[in-house]
Image: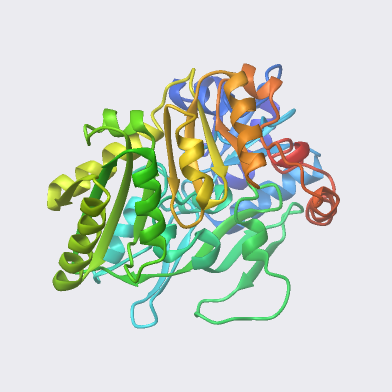
Length: 427
């Protein structure tokens, strides 16, 4: 173990750059081990400070056929499949500088290790923001958000990570530095590497820098919550989808989630409006009227109460309980109510049909996967006990693109050293 760690010292330095596995803080050890197949322990964690050091470290691993697990701040390292035979962990947490903020062009370029919360603070100084809402906003890094395609309810208005990513700089499996896209908002022809790398769990390359489009901060925000019977909530969601209202976030909530948030009884619909004062007030009242006609209970949240509500919602769906299983799902939006009435804890975005479920036990996972697939959807396990991930296919992929995926992996990482086992079918 020490021999491998020492071999990286000439690249990144010894002090606080190469940490022997036994000297890493316990909490980080536990998180990393949740991402690795039992039976092997990485020899060290390597922490480069620049893209060039990262490239040299990856080239060194490539030359020695060492398998690499990549991480940022480890906030989502337990997501995805279990890494197999990992030799070295490489963290991008200190590759974290602001490269360029083109305020007038509404773009920003940052290094992958920058924390999402820090970037938002920088943008807020210019009344702008990055329209993503990752699972762990305080600790998530930009690279980790891209690698796991981690965004939640804001996709209602702004789309996914892929939709907002304009360019990337990444290190290939052989240690070469490459770029894709650019720093302006435009369409380009060719192979869209940004979309390939988003959600690839660092199996194709390691992102070191990214450029995003950003948006002006809205003047004011308000959230409407409707609760009541399954049929009425389903009708309210259908009405909202077909209306001229423009929520930035809109989700259906399971009855137990509604109860835990003390919002009322039955299923819930939560919709957030962000714009100028007059627009937010008008749209909120119109949605309340829809709820009243359907016999639903309604309330409006604003200011600190609103922020607290959305924070508690995130905490309930992504609480760090080791025995629970957190899953990402996708179904036809019209099937959302059927799914939510079959689980205790869950939310589904009303327009995309994507959502998150918290389940107990592998049997419930298989049952819900079958239900999602019967509604032309999917269920993917994000975090779960290792014993569950060893028994149940994390990805549950049944499409016809597996051969293409393996071909792309072969092109980008022929030696299979980048996060092996983390993606679909053990890629």
